[in-house]
Length: 142
Image (cartoon, rainbow, N blue to C red; front, side):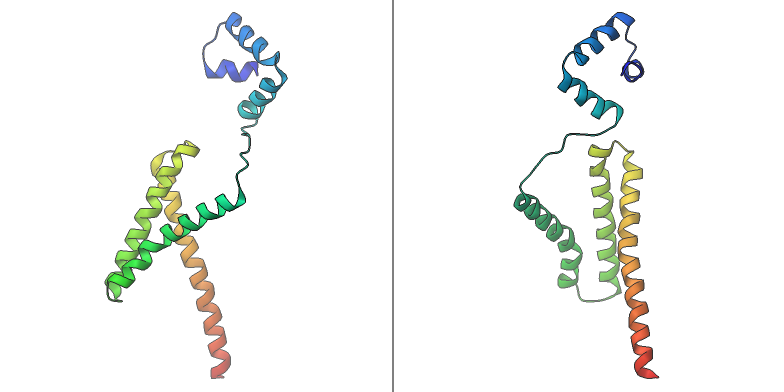
């Protein structure tokens, strides 16, 4: 703990001893400090599974609504596919930027990472489906 707090700020030896004595005198505070400062762990929040499920449902609908809505509004064409892709990538990027409030990463890195993961999440299932479909069609052709 001494080393952790020495890295945090330029405490004098007296200040450091005072802080450490105060923390270590309370076992719960000491354990909390060790979990947060040394191990990087945080206390879990226990939320209702129904509440978490509803939050996920709303997030899923909101996240998927905009790209699909463009196909409903615009006629199915190459342009609507491009617009839906751009809207999706911008949305993913903004979610990645918002994620920095929790991760303390650089906003550009986090946004780009989220777009990359989103592209992988779209491309990999597409390739698997394309492979499976072509395999099934080949069996019927031959």
